Length: 576
Image (cartoon, rainbow, N blue to C red; front, side):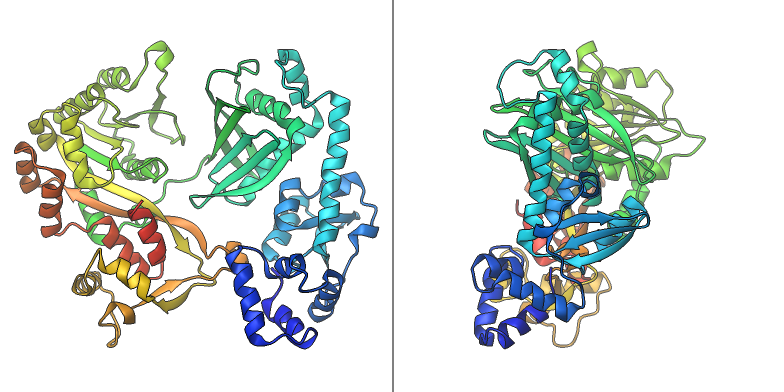
């Protein structure tokens, strides 16, 4: 984004706009989630050429007219198409040592550094107008369409022969598109890639820090080639279009090994592909890095030191349950211990651990895998997920007969897990005897370190908070966790929290990365007694809170006060 102070100066000095009008335009751009300079040009408030000539002079960056440039194809392709479209950057000239880049934001250091690493060339940056960049971006599509005609990829909706799909998938344009989509996802630090066919085109979206963002729209005629290319990479059947398929493939980017877990399902306009990005060789995070507070961390440490019993991690899909289990396994993974896991699918390969993936087609499911494991002399067993009564019973019998069992379950909070197991038909005494600890978790986005600033809650936010917790409760919570409040911070309206307006480092989102918020329920004698009496989730919750359990919401409040996340994020994930 161009510096707002220079744009404001231009509006004030050159167009003679009043400060109130400038503020109004800035807020309108913010409300529409558009960059201020693009918003002003789009609304006709400023003339593009005059604004960018002024910006060039004030920033001391040369202005290049891309409309007058003949850009060689090999130079254009130095910048991947998705990067060009999302960051408005074009490579327009290349020498032996230098790459000349045209950008509408020449202060986007992160993107410039990425191009330097990618090419090994020294970037020379020029300012360009948005219309000039858009014209250059059309060159990707124009040349691509011509090449696609040459390789016979069309928009026809018909059943392609396998050899035709295979040929399309091996042509250079398709290979380049898929490569660019994957590389840009890694650059954006995306966790998932969604490739979705529509009637008009192919939509590409990335999930970054838990939020889906639209990245680009590809021409409809590349749909079949892209699908076939990804199927070939993942070793799937390219001529199968009516049945869901799952696979996996690996690539190396910037000397890092990455795996992509692929899911393909048939939808109305073709086949939707979702790829989970997995960083191979990434070391498990410590419990402190995951975000466990000292009290809950101590409970978990105590639970995994026991020679037998169950540790259950609960939460919705995508809440980081598997990551937590891998971190626990990282603590337990010693040469004198036999650890076996059964997963669906295996997300990370860990040395020293025996990992198996279920295969229902041959009858190898969680239950049968668990039975087999018990004949393998295990000390610790990890079950990817407890989905049915049979799996739960085998896991609990294993925990009762001298094994430490780790697993996940889908429930909203820790106390609900225990009645949920009873609903699955597990005898209460078995649950009470085997469960060591229950962890419920969610992931919240972390505030950007570079633009995070303190602020005080507005009246509406205070009302929302007061429905969930009283002031005395918050003050006691902070005191218990060693957070020193200022003398004036005696009511919600005066307590300082943090928010982030957005900057270049966080791509104007205000957030960078994620961290967990947790509640850890210790299954002590009191909880065990409630289970045996068929206690309800609210009864277990009341007992646990009375005896010191920190709820997920309270865990989030501590992190919000410390400036790790925002109140809005905590409310978003705990009230879904």
